[in-house]
Image (cartoon, rainbow over all chains, first blue to last red):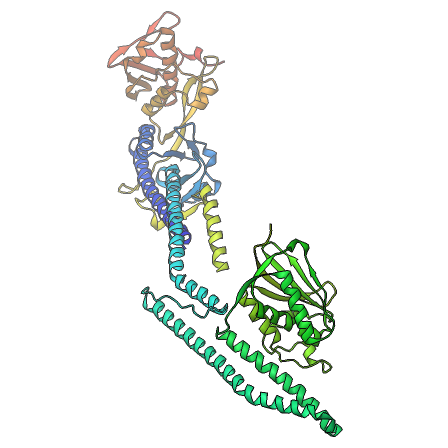
Length: 442
Length: 192
């Protein structure tokens, strides 16, 4: 904008200066022409002196055309540079002005015919001074425009940063809350009424959100606890019936099998829900121990295999790990392994291998299954609660609670780890868990 | 925003380009309206006079060619030309172009013509002493130039010269001293 204004100012001032200068020169030319006319009339023999005197006082150059013949005192003046159009106009009795290159880069030429003395006067005014003034003006305006542009830009950046700073704080706080840090609040400032209002609204919104989440978690926890007792009674009843299965009719036996299976699923769901609720509420206590990751994994796999039945999957340990240790809650770690193996058994034909790989400062625990793998679009979502991927729509697989992988993620997070679903080298799904190492041998 | 940036870029380019020639030359002259020209400059006669006009005519003065012969050279003079004007131009000598062509004069440029009249076809000319301060040979040639100039204005019988009102006589090449110098006395200075 300052460049635009500077440009407009320059062109405006330039036009005014040029017009003023040319008008002044034109008026002076009229006066000089009248002096020449009077000299020719009264004392023609002093014409040369008069022309000399005018040239010196007006700082211009005069070219006379008397009775069609050029008369000039200065041999430097090329009379041929007076334009034919100006000469024609003078012959026709018109006064003309034009800007030409004759004595300097830029000359203002005024042509005045004086029929009363059969003489045409061409007065050449050099505009070098004006050109110099223009360059100075351009330099001044250009510098001013540059200065104001830099000043304006700097001021604009400073003001916008100052104005947007509260929004950056809000954005950071929102990001922390989205990351699960519900204790985040905006600090109360006195930066201005709008910012204060925004801070209050934001904190109120977060408070309400946290309250709602806590209420929802409490509700789920309460419901789960309330359901657990009648469910336990149902399970016991089913167990008693199982003991008398042989006495039941075949149709009743089939119904009993269905009932037992559903009760088992329901119990699993309730257990998972209670655990998730405790996790959401932060009520799950951690009992951290520094344990050899290799040994821990072997024990967990063995224990889970015993519970689930079937063959124990191979555990491949990177020899570089040696006796590398991790700081974990043993119960949660076993739950992670159990859920992943259970998931593989239910949906992917079991675990192919469990591999431990040493990385810089952490260990990579890979649980690879024998299934067809997880579609890339589903890999991001398999850890969401009750997320149903492609396998869930397959009626041949056993129905799960839909919370197993969600619980795995919660437990991994509680151990400062990360989990992601990828594809194993064998083509099946790979659940990759990164856990920080403590006391990793260098 | 993009168009505004483009506009700014164009303006900056125009500014940079215009800085090369800040004031541009005109392709054709601008004509000032007759009514806008002051001081009666375009009037056919000189204002505040009785319809006076000045016209110019060409009249000969006499200078010297490369060979030292007296030759006629024309000069523009206001009409009608006077003897005084003709003698004034004689004292002005050749212009730069004529000098470049080898035209010279022996009439001193410092000589001032005080008075010049013609009476009974004889010119009476009073000049400053610059004429007497040049050599005799130069004086003969200078006087010859004046004689032919006066003859062209009607002084066919010759000229009488005075220097600051003191009568002047010229010793001719023949040895005779004369106060009335006639064209015949100076005919030898002309070519052919």
